[in-house]
Length: 131
Image (cartoon, rainbow, N blue to C red; front, side, top):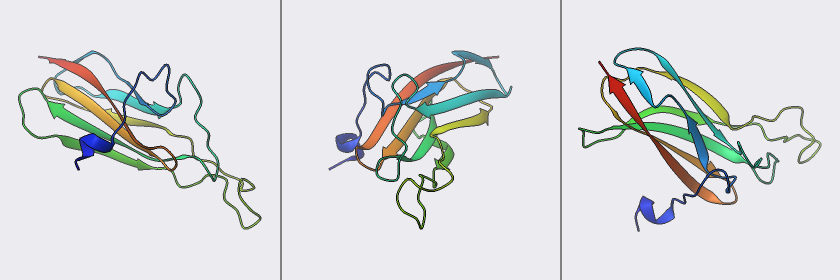
């Protein structure tokens, strides 16, 4: 078995589990830009003690490189848990994150996320770097 066998993918407009990557299509080499990754952008994902997004990871694969680089790893640890019971807690962490990135080569941003009920999901977005 390989990771490719367990990751799921779909159109984020029709499937609430797909991580949505929002970033410019083109950036200047070495300049800062913002990447937002969220789950449930078009169709809200539940955020309850019983059903939630546990983490989002963001990677970059340069077009001219063999290996992928991990940019960020975000964990969501509050889902309404409480000593008074499920969904009675005072805080819920929403699955939406922002990373500030600088690139020196064109490539692909890749995002993965883990739903505690429905497993691993992925998406990708090409990004071009201009000098």
